[in-house]
Amino acid sequence: MRFSTQSLLWCAVITQTVVIVVLVGMVIPNERAKATAAVESIMAERKASSRVERTTSGSPTALTSQKEKGRRYFQPSTDPSWLKAAAKLTPADAKEMLARNTLEIVNLDERAEKAWNIIGQLCQNGYPHEAWALIEEDTGAVRQKQLNAFFREADLPKEELLRLLADQQTHDRAIGLYGYWGRFSAEEFSRMDMSEFPLKSQQEIGAFRKLMSDMFAEKYDPADPEASRTVRADLLSRVVDQANAGMFSYEEIAKLMTRDPSKDGFLYWEATEKVAAELKAGQNTFYGTDAEIIRLMTAQNPEKVLNLAVTPGSREQRFYHIALTEWLDKDYKKGEDWYYARESAMTEDAKERSAVAFVRASVRAGNYGAADQWLARVKAEGWHNALVYEKSLIEADKRKAQGQ
Image (tube, rainbow, N blue to C red; front, top):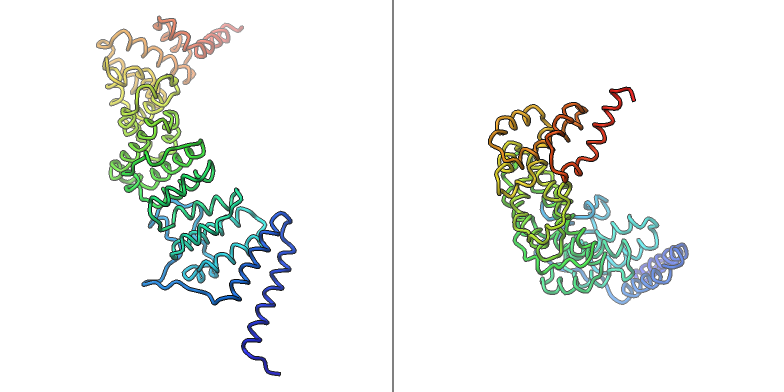
């Protein structure tokens, strides 16, 4: 028996429909209706018209590498079947893939990653509006990763993208912002106007902090730290912009600094000089942002920091005892030598701050006798209150020595 080509094609369509219907019956109940509707829509489209493929002057490629373009949530798929389909992906293909993944993939993280690839690739292939229409309406991991891919890859006017971003809320907006910012290099981002991106929630603050951490890590070269210092300074200026606009707290700068592989305290000290004084008010004098920056600076160049901090009227002066403690913790002998070489020229305030530093460093080293001798030089009640912990250990050591 011979069959016409048209008959064979209809057999294929019927077979495909049967397979999909079986899969629909296996999908979890709360998604069955949506998945079924999506599949029926796909089949209707395929019956009504042939696939329309975009014509281009050059062949589109799969998602670009991180070196070529910004930050990403996932690495590009290495699945051979995906790589083959990606360059020619159309809206109809994407719609079918998303619907099939909803039916077949139980793991939400896996489905979100595939959705991220599909939406991003569809945008790259020149279908941003069609990609937007395919983003899931229900909130969750899949929608969020689709939004990230869309705002990262969609070739649309800036005004349209910002309008779409403005319509998003909390997690959706945060992940969309991270995607949009991810399309820019560190150099490009460092020149952007941050007033266009008000941070409206803790999630958005977190996205901004993550972006900055990513960019600092990308630009820093431990073999040549100075090579990227200018662009890292410009990035920090954007952080300061957000802080002065009330969008990013001064404490957040310390969190950012701990994730910065450069550990360049001097760079942060220079940048934060431009942060409004009222935003720095109330920070913990020992564990606050300024104190943490001073510690980093001391690790970089202790003598430089101490020479600044011992100078009356300097910005560093009120952190002198913190810098000296840090040096003594890391290299007691050199810190001690530096102190005795300058003690005679020091103010009484500097001498007392020095005594506080020696008490703390000696206690940490387990040298309670030396700590007690330095404690005798501390006169101000405020400093004694600050040394309650160290004093308790000194007294405990005395009792132990007396056999109590």
